Length: 431
Ligand SMILES: *Cc1c(COP(=O)(O)O)cnc(C)c1O
Image (cartoon, rainbow, N blue to C red; front, side, top):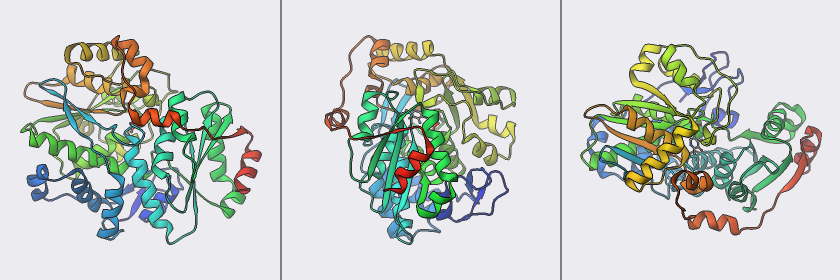
């Protein structure tokens, strides 16, 4: 498959080039040149298949030209040793739980798939160094996704004292090929160091550097697996007609993957992009005008994005046609107060505990489902990752799952650095 840039100014790339580069040289995002449809028989029998079997069929449609079936199957099966169950919340609203991976966040699947794909391509090249700046969740998913993957070293840069204790121990206690760099600064300093490193000729001549950013095709496309599997589970229940999917969205990678699924023939009737107060796409859907602006902090902080990078892919998918986009996708936006109220209402009415991100998806369905439709929202993180916020909203205590507790028992190992680029560069070169 050939990958082109959404800015249309770079040469087309192969899959391995697109994965190692992340961003195209012209600053655009890579898109596959075509989207293969899956055959009718696949959808006729999808309810009989396992998550791994479904994911493998979807992966073949994306990556089958570039990777032999046996290798791709191993990558997919290694990525998904856990389930993503659909759970009934009300008679019309279902939760697609995407938090059963190692760090209890939906980014696990993309990170794990990308790690395995990079390791696969690396067999033809040398050692790869992944640099990732994080304000919390991305670092833990990437670090755990890449843990123990041969030939790949990961450096997680995070702002000292600015990530939660749970998040910090998810990437500082791992060891092996994962190094945590505790930067004396804020998240923007971490991101600036990573950006400068990618632009530094000396560093790039001596080391192979890559990013594990969510714009990477190897990270966002595998998220399409979720939607096929959700459809299969709803079909098993006899509820797959008139399905509406609500996706809590920040950088819009998850929902873009869902839209790729739709373009491959997945019969979802329509989508709702659920936002917190960072609602530039909601505004675009309403007015046709896209105006990125600085993000504002909310209690659903993994969606605090003011200029969602994957929005360019959505425009590209539908040829910039606002009407085509709004006929399939609608938006919803919620203040912190509304998010808290949704968590409380859902808990009291059903006993189901939402996290602040999933709460946006749930609420979008509650207010937006029409007669005859059934809704599925993505529950993108385990509520225990946002323990204080959730407990404050629902007025009850929630248990910390064993997997999270195990991270917290590990020993923190990190290297302290200032936000000075020269020092960071010397450190990398000394490794
Ligand atoms: C990253 C994240 C999101 C947003 O996903 P996008 O693909 O960036 O739209 C939502 N919820 C949680 C918990 C996340 O970590």
